Amino acid sequence: MEEADRRPLLKVLGGISFVLVLVAAVTVVIIVSFNTLITREEAVRDAWERVQAVQDQRQDLLADVLFDLADRGSYLPAADEWRRAQAGVDTAPTFNEEVYAQLVADEAAARLASAIRGSAAIENGEIRHLVDQLADAVGRLAIERRQYNEEVGIYRHYLSRIPTRWVARAFGFADVPEYRISDK
Image (spheres, one colour):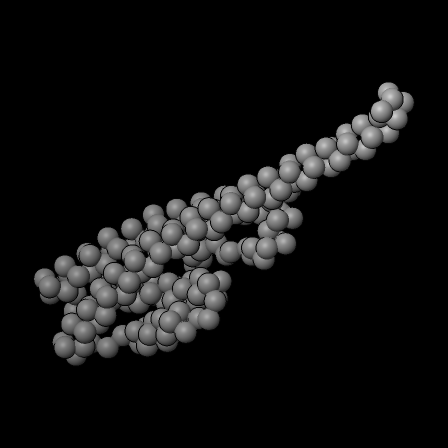
């Protein structure tokens, strides 16, 4: 083959090579973006599981305090609201709905804890000990809530960046709610 005959062939091969390198680069970007989103989504879920563990402890403590108060003839109307709100958490069909239901339950739990602290029956040593444990659980919950919200912020940061945003849309990654308690 003569030199003049090889030039068009070299141009075609050069074009094909360029396209292959471009496709490989796009594939790498998609894979890295996808893996980043998976990692960040798992970090959000792990943080939520830690929140749930502390919430379960708080729920058990609230139930124990209410049981002891009921034994002493004390009734707190806020307990009914808390039980209804907690049932909403247990029946939430999606992760986002569970977070929103938990916000409602947390506000009800805060009102219940306030009512418990205001109850004359907590002067009893055993109940007082449970109330102190409840206060510790509320403090741990605030720490876990903050860590969850930090993970949500990082995840949202990646969701908002190009090209990760495009990959998130293509593969169905969704936004997740923050877990903020109102300051009422």
